[in-house]
Image 1 (cartoon, rainbow, N blue to C red):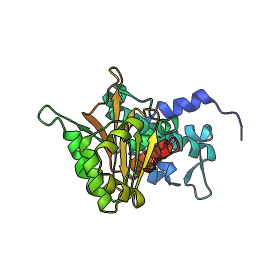
Image 2: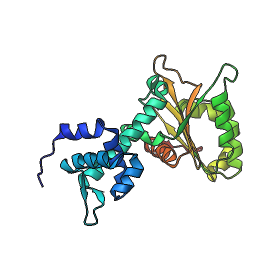
Image 3: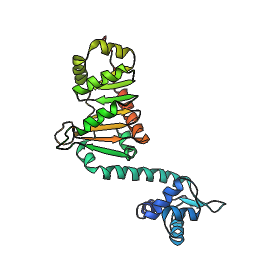
Image 4: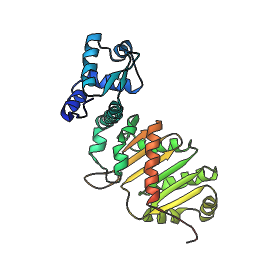
Length: 269
């Protein structure tokens, strides 16, 4: 087998043909016969065979001893990246305005690289007749959570009461606040209630820098809000919401990143 790979030709094969992309992604699920691939792609035998020969020429596919089509090692790596690219493109096109108009500096590179995990998301947008739609929806979802992790560089009085009530239900809660938000929360919170919660199911962390993002991840949803890119203020009107396994995983990894940048708060300090 010739070891040299024509990069330009490989990119042409993957980008310039919907059929070739479909074949690669179909084979990513496992080996398939020509009939399987015809059914999966809707292509004729002639078109599918021609496309498969082009992919085989670039060492992306081959036929095994049962005459089924299989991805090579190179093909599997390409399929993985291709699937990620398509998911990313879907996220950016579906919610283009959200990503264009907000400050993404609070999202680390590793999370940006996996932003395709947010493909199955919904945009919560406030309206002139319901200016608190995004926030009220978030509060409703929060009340049904069994596990809560959050990062908040903004102070919202209603959340103090909400988290206090959830803490009383013995729901595990981890919250990362900026120093300013933490001080304001402590000012308004009932210290006896807070002290009891910190001994059991509530953990507070303080982060010195502004994360430029406010998000919450629970056992069944993830939601995130961002700063406006131009006026550098938090946008209360738009939040991205995901119930998907990948979306929740994305939120958990983002939380873990900020947890490493934070210090756990001790009320006795």
